[in-house]
Amino acid sequence: MHSVLRKVSRRAAMAGLRIPMPCDRTIVPRSPFTAAGSFVSPSRCFAAAASPSFANENQEVVIVGGGNSAGYAARALVEHGMANKKLCIVTKETYAPYERPALTKGYLFPLDKKPARLPGFHTCVGSGGERQTADWYKEKGIEILYEDPVTKIDPGKQTLTTTSGKLLKYGSLIIATGSTSTRFPEKIGGDLPGVHYIRDVADADSLISSWERTKKVVVVGGGYIGMEVAAAAVGWNLDTTIVFPENHLMQRLFTPSLASKYEQFYQDRGVKFVKGLSIKNLEAGSDGRVSAVKLEDGSLLEADTVVVGIGAKPAISPFEMLETNPKVGGIQVDGHFRTKIPGIYAIGDVAAFPLKIYDRITRVEHVDHARRSAQHCVKSLLNPSETYDYLPYFYSRVFEYEGSSRKIWWQFFGDNVGETVEVGNFNPKVATFWINSGRLKGVFLESGSPEEFEILPRLARNQPLVDRSKLENASSVEEALEILKKSLPN
Ligand SMILES: Cc1cc2nc3c(=O)[nH]c(=O)nc-3n(C[C@H](O)[C@H](O)[C@H](O)COP(=O)(O)OP(=O)(O)OC[C@H]3O[C@@H](n4cnc5c(N)ncnc54)[C@H](O)[C@@H]3O)c2cc1C
Image (cartoon, rainbow, N blue to C red; front, side):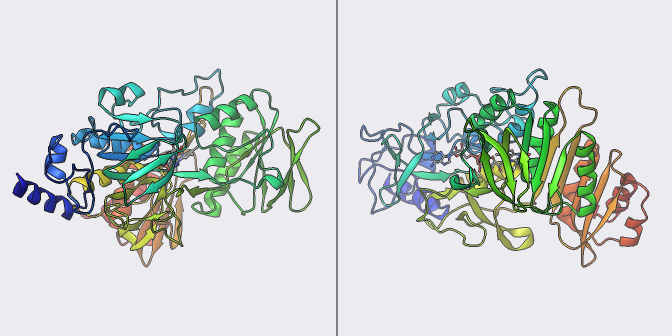
């Protein structure tokens, strides 16, 4: 038995696995997973049966965080037979993991236009999988500890402590704590009633109840959260202004020409823009609620609700002792999502990982990466083979509520570096192609057909050499995509 376990443990050690094992000679594998993938550390002793001193019954894999990537990791663990009585999820939220992007899309639809509500958007509905409700986790033998954030880790003892004081044991630990919204400081009015940030269902509920009695909304931030919230506010017929310090919407991705098309679209629906100005402070009215946004030039924008979408920060607490990346933030992992401490992994928004295709370290705050990193991490837990090879992908969908005269749906793949060629008139399609040293690097498409959207990742992945002048002369998006398709290997 011991030689079998030694072989197993060597295999598992090579795989970077660390599974709780009973002390010394009383080893009784509890499951195929333990038997097939246990790593015996001579310096660590651990009772495999749930110890009464630990609050979690399932101890082999613990996921901290109950968001998008946790949901996808749970699904992958179920698929590999590694969940039943082995997996515990510890989350800050009241709900089982759900598809977070819904919060600024279907969730904010006007109340008379069939807004999305849980359980309608639990993971993994976004990728066409089973809807993972709280009951689904129970049926699969997965333990979830709700509303009890982890506050402390002891990697030596392989334990975690939660806010309520629970002590949890883990064999392998997956950190999936995501990001938190960047807030305005309290001293400039960032915490005033009527000022909203959107990260979870509770935040979205609070915004909806404000909107029920709101007339004027100011959205601070011209990124995708700002764009999506402003689109929803239009559906509510609110007087909406977007303010941001950059020159145009989606500064980090859109070209000025592309942005101008979207800005015009919003303006046609009554949205006002204030560009190139930062916020000085948020002013309170006599009732203590926010009443205006003061800009750096001293001007005031009246508001009874302010929604702040100015970015997010990786939620690394309480895991600061793990190696963090000073440049991109987040917990540093390798191409298998392993941190420097064996048996501890980080996935989703919080992970700083090697972006193989462009040979740089990055962090990605998007749901496609949350999904793929979770799946890859679970594979690595079992048997690390290929390193993660992610192709950046961003998307947004807005104005999709009933009665909207036009829907907006765009996708971007690749890297937005180099010169750009824009094709199409936004009626409804427009595409932008980024070309660097003659090669296609990034591709953006608005209102493509499913077949056209399908070509985009192939183009961005292959980075074909392109004839720029041919592309510039294309009379339609369809023609441009045909030209590019011909440059792909068969
Ligand atoms: C409103 C909104 C709209 C978005 N729209 C899009 C979109 O259109 N397209 C797109 O690609 N991406 C979008 N994103 C980004 C996408 O949702 C995230 O990239 C994705 O959710 C990241 O998954 P994650 O599991 O890493 O983090 P999250 O889904 O944020 O989950 C993290 C979880 O960990 C919990 N947590 C944090 N700290 C602790 C702790 N100490 N103990 C226990 N639990 C903890 C949090 O409460 C949360 O439940 C959007 C994000 C938001 C907020």
